[in-house]
Structures are given as structure tokens and as C-alpha cells.
Length: 307
Image 1 (cartoon, one colour):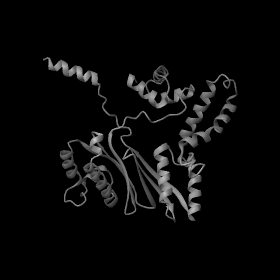
Image 2: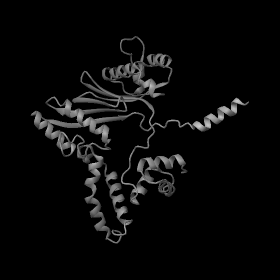
Image 3: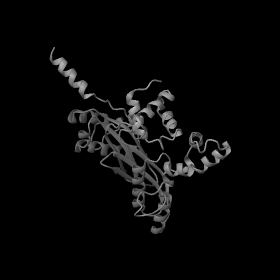
């Protein structure tokens, strides 16, 4: 699989490793981005795989609790300007209401639902919005929690939408919001170390062993010793990748991991609070946005003007 200069740039943004090393990693892994990250880690050049290389599209990731039902939804627009208009945000909030009340199975089912306070469908209303706002808009995804205690958090006007689901017998809104803020800030891959697939554990162990193989001070040690050392380093992997094992970012409230914070805050409230699940939407995550070359565009306009 071939790779381009943009792929090298993206890998550099993901790993903070130099351009030449990124190019070598892509060449060694036949252009596979995930394998290239592992290759760099095994060489001791990259500490962890970051997801910062993803190009964001415009729009809003929004979360809300409506009559006890938690909803998170992403609606995309062409520009950030349109996404910040009252008309666009009214649309997003009304779509969240439809998701909460009608429980559509998927985006197509949502489009067929009646729009609040209207005889029109969601599709028909969106067509009107496209005409009035002047931009194409798409409902990308949504999810909901219908049971338990739900807490919603929207970060930076819609760059992140987080929904936290708790099992509790007290008002745990503040706890849920703090956990949601942790998720938005740290973007954990898993919620708890017990949820990490064995395949991912094995992959991380292999990376740690490969690091020792490439370390002159460790390379000569027996394989069994390296494997034991690698197993001992898994706690650091869980601490980085798993929500409940991460250091709680609000150290002004609690010093320790997120699981400890929840337990401590529940004790202070005199009740029980259990983290059940969460949903985290990042606006535009995984959407490849067209990259325009401004210089080429101007040159083309000049050339066309002379014809």
C-alpha cells in the first residue's frame, strides 16, 4: 500500500516523531498507519498512539438529558460559522428531543420521524434548513441511554459531546459531570481494564518486549525475563488507556484514579454511585475533510482569467 507526504505528516502529528522516522515507519509497514505507530513505538521513538491526526469536519457533537433519557448526537455542517448559528443549534436540540422520545433505530429512521411542533418529517425540515442556512447538513450519528441516571456534558460549544450513565441512589449529577469532563479531556479507549480485549493486551505486551529487544542494555536478557518485565508495565498501559484507572484530572477535588474519585464522592454523599457506561462523540472524528491548496487555487484562477 503506497503512502503520501500527507500520510507522513499525519503520522508525525499522531506521534510527535520526526518526518524521516515517520517516512521510514510507513515504508517498513507498507503504508499501514496503525502498524507504523507500533513500529515507531517498538523502536522507542514514540511513547503512545495518539488520535490527534484525525481531520475534523464542522458541526456539533451535542449531549442532553431529556425526561431522564440521555442522548448524544452529531450533526455536521460545511462551516463552523453555520454550526454556531441559532438556527443550526435549534435543529440539533430538536433532533435530540426526537431521539429521546421516539427512539429511532438508526439515522434513516430518525429522518422519517415527525419533527417537534411540526407536521413535517425530519428530512423535510432539514431540507428547509439547508435552503435557509445555505449549507449542506447531515445527521451523522446518535445514541441514547434510556435507563439509569444520565449526565450530559458538551465541551467547547460542541467539539465533544459526552453522555455518562450511572447506577446510583443519590443525586450524582456533579460526579457524572466530572467523569464526563475527564472523558472529554483524556479520551480513554476503554472504560475499565477488565474490558480490554486480550488481543490488545497481547499487542501491548509484544510492543514492550520489542522495545527491550531494541534496547542495548536489555536485548541480551532472556525472553522469559523480558516477558515478566513487560507484564509488570501493563499497569501503566491501563492507567493511560482505561477511564477508571486514569489519574483523575480534577486533582483539586481528589488525588487518585477515577474509580477512587467516584467511590470517595459517593461516600461523601452518603450513597452508592456506580459507573455503568458512557458515550463520547468528538466532532468530525474520522471524517476526512477536503484539503485545498490555496496557492494552486489562485494560480488556476489567474490562468483561467487569461483565457
